[in-house]
Length: 95
Image (cartoon, rainbow, N blue to C red; front, side):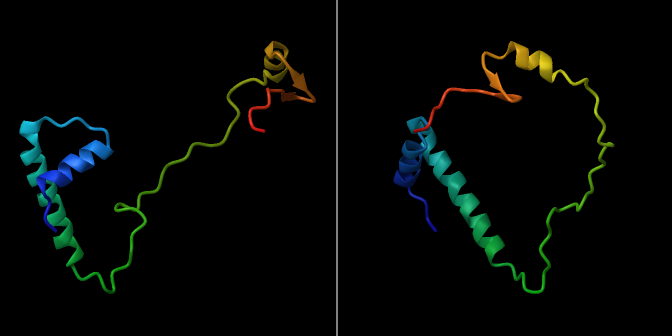
């Protein structure tokens, strides 16, 4: 796929990105190189290759689920402008 100067200008306009006129040719070449690399990667035979969920298949170390703060619900509800049955009341914003 070939990238033209006008393609870069149109993409920049749609993305609302200001590109200096002197830099358009450089961006055009960069995008052409990226698309050429994508074409190379698409040409690779991936039959019988099992997909990976993550390249390192790392497992996260999780800390124990413990309560670390005191319950301040009553205090926060007392500060709220409006509450009812333990819920915060807010103005209706969607009809």
